[in-house]
Length: 389
Picture 1 (cartoon, one colour):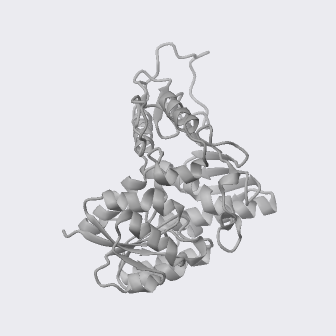
Picture 2: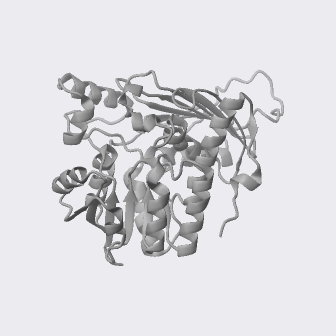
């Protein structure tokens, strides 16, 4: 039950905002290496977070016999070679999303980690956000024993039609595309927003409706930027994603609404859950992951006040400000890291394993194909459940 030694590979903005703080905070992790192809990035991160070893060659960190696991936060196209090297060295792997850009890469990753007996976790963190796990728990409780308010509007009593009680998850993302580096959109390194970002919400739907499997996908818009995706599951559940890149970070980016059996389950940017249509419907509020201002309340309205407080006192770019004064809601990054650490220590399944990573990549690629063909595409069961040793 020793402390696990880690190596951070990729020292960019995301690593500064999540990986380094979370690993430094975790009581069971010793962060030994900072690695980046731009050595100066690794040196700056090491100085900021007290990391003793620096390199611009990931093989130096992977070859260290003290290292138990690596965290990958690089551009997408180099995930496969890093994972191959780490697996062959017997290191566990915590990989930033997407696990891979293409199906064949994902198949190779599955084979590598299974051959070498290492654990892989993909940081599709929305499934681990405290507010999202609470929302799913509330929905499953209602699904098992539906209760409705006495004033429920019913025109006449009748048996429900087959499609009336099928759950639907609506996800609205309003993003600000000026925040993207061109590497995010480059087809060689980022692949656009479906493969780079919407894997989050494809995975979330798969996790939410498990054990049902996705069976049909329809997508529209741009595979690079604004788009929509409709995903249908074998039990009739469905998800609609509406992703726009022409929004503003002056308003929270993410909204989730699940409807099922005459009830609404609503998640407001990971800081508040609301429930409607049932007797037990008190709102739940959740603290931010990082906030240093003076507003003490929690919840959605409090988040808006915190944001206004922050920007009204700032005259510089808020992206630069994030490094010195983090301001983040809890999207589940620390919870995912902790669950992965416990999986290594207790030899239990990864909280988001190589099959989950594959499915999000596969569905993203099918969505891109659907846009190109302008038609609905099937998701065959043999494709979504690959057999790879």
